[in-house]
Amino acid sequence: MRCPARPAAVPVEVQRAVSDASAPGEKTLALWAERVMARMNDVAARTDVCVRIVGEKESRTLNREYRGIDRPTNVLSFPADLTLPDGKGKILGDIVICDPVVIREAQAQGKPAGEHYAHMVVHGMLHLYGYDHVDPVEADVMEDIEREILGRLGIADPYRAA
Image (cartoon, rainbow, N blue to C red):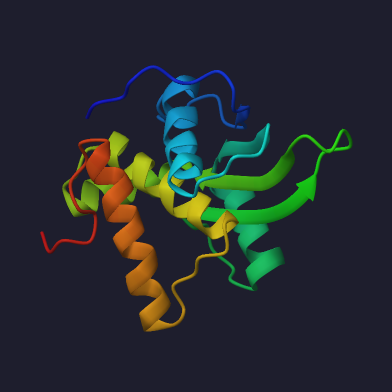
């Protein structure tokens, strides 16, 4: 996996709600989020996004409260699309990634945990930009963009058959 230095101009906050999380470092998580912003041609003077790494309890609670599904999930996205008070940027939203779920999925799929984390960040970011995968045609578009961004990071197609 190739991860060039992170541009400092785009604020990506990383929160770790679990101390034993296996998630990559803040700079790497931020880089992945920023790659999606670049692909989306997000030219706001400043775009804020938060990536929060959580355990199963918080993921389950959020998934139940916001999606009506009573189990933890790999990634949740909470779009905000708010203009900052100074008018020179926006708050894109928050992504919540459940560390234990991502680690289990990576093991089950026989892929490096870091690559699966990259996929979850890219996937979650695309949801913040309004992409979805409920409709098969929309899912194809979203997956193609994920493949493109991940490929540029040197990460294999996450949808290929193992």
